[in-house]
Image (cartoon, rainbow, N blue to C red):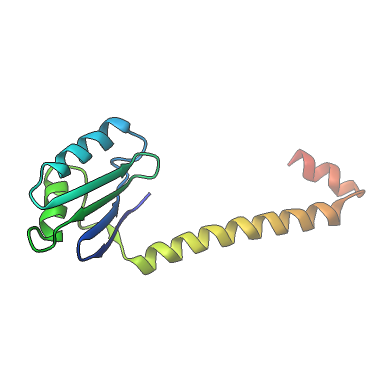
Length: 123
């Protein structure tokens, strides 16, 4: 999984592999952010590695929240994907999945009942 940032004033979403799969790390991040001045609500999903931070953009900046996460070892600010890169990666993955399913079905049908069908099962 890659790092990802999406931000609008007052709301920051990051995805980080350093939280994914760990309820303990998710709880640590949530506590860390909730103690930060200006943060109004934090939601961390250890299943996806997603961290959503709602904050008062007049009190605290997006940069200070990212710095806090980076300095605490939960985020690497030099590695995030842009929104376009993230969407492109997801679309490519779905496209490959669909292609594999369609192509596999076609090959299976084309080889059905032929001597090659036995060979394809063995491979």
